[in-house]
Image 1 (cartoon, helix red, strand yellow):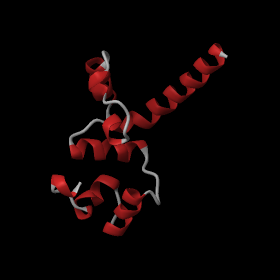
Image 2 (tube, helix red, strand yellow):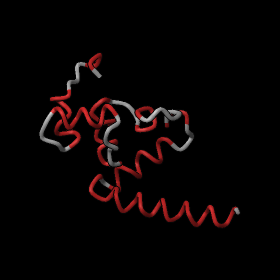
Image 3 (cartoon, one colour):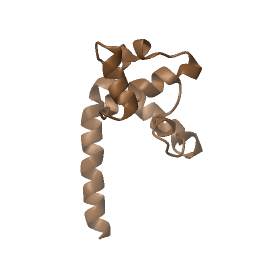
Image 4 (cartoon, rainbow, N blue to C red):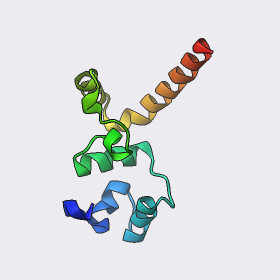
Length: 98
């Protein structure tokens, strides 16, 4: 992140914490960020969440544009509900394929 000119001080608001030390806990793996924090960090760094967590970038998916539009329509404040719904659907899907 230093290569992008982003410091721990810059990321306090992104992670919703008050100290650089708290940011360091996330960056070192001592704390796990929430999905909201991951999304804010990816936006701050200008990368997809998939790129941030080391998965295949969404740019490789044929559904990228549609997913992006849907996520924007949902709004960040509603993402926890969406994540819960996706988890529930994934659990049901897993039951159907067993």
